[in-house]
Amino acid sequence: MIHHVWKTVRGPFYCLCCQEHSWEVYGGNQAGCTKCGCAHVCSDHVFEKTCPLAATHEGGVCCTITGYCIPSLRLSDAEYVDNVHFEPSHAKAASQQLLGIEEINVVVKWFLTGQESQRCKKEEIDKVISKYHMTFVKVLKQKKISQKENHCNPKCVLSALAMVLNLHKPKYMRRASAKFCEFCSLHIYKCLKSLNLTNIYNRRVNIVIGMLYLMKQGLVIQNVQWLPRISELSHCLPHETTLEKNFKLCMKLVCETENEIKLCLRQRVHLI
Image (cartoon, rainbow, N blue to C red; front, side, top):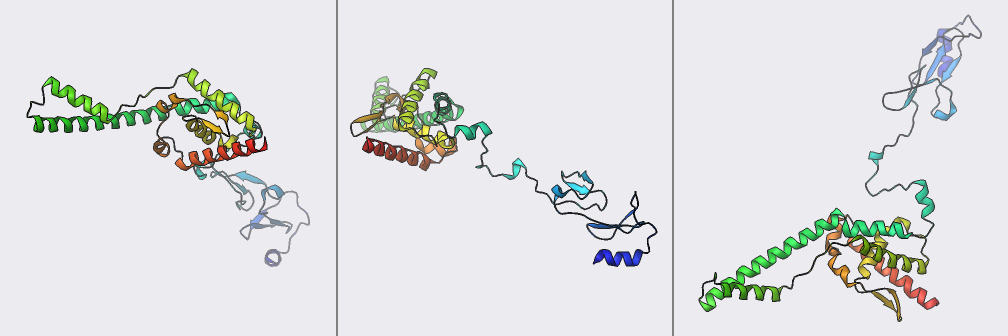
């Protein structure tokens, strides 16, 4: 309709079919040739290829005849939220396979020896030192008042120190070695292999961390030991309350993973 009105106003045309059009834009996405009167209408889809296109500074394309910018969906990595994770093509195939011991060992090493773990241990040691200091000063004041002694007396200091150590038994903090990480990874791999879990690749971090916490006390169901008790883990694992702050992991995820593994193990034993 618009083109018909334009032809009525601009006509008559002296050429029936010209080789080089002389375009005149009369709409947002429409133009007409002033020589032959033919119409050009821009499409809203790039793949139809009805227009000669040129790139714009914003990353889109526009028609060189009308200047009409073709609608297109442009995505940027910055537009995605933080919890969106894109797996490479090889990872999609790996999600259908069993977790390898090397993949498990990577997670174990990161969780036990990484910077986040060291920061957790430093914070816990600072809290213990602060607690010892407050208790030590409190005990010294009590001894000074009750025994009327000089609180700088060596006997008084040693006695107060012994009381503090009895009240707050120090927890030995250690850094896991590479051999210890491989030892834990081997037991996790054996447990996962016996369960034949093949759909946990995208949740491998939560699964491995949950099994590390299970190995603090061991996991025995119906007289079958699925995970050994490794007491050394109590000196290496950070407290569960620090997972959200230092590791960006929800504390509930660890509990859910533990419950999932226990349920799966019970079903496995029942089938056997």
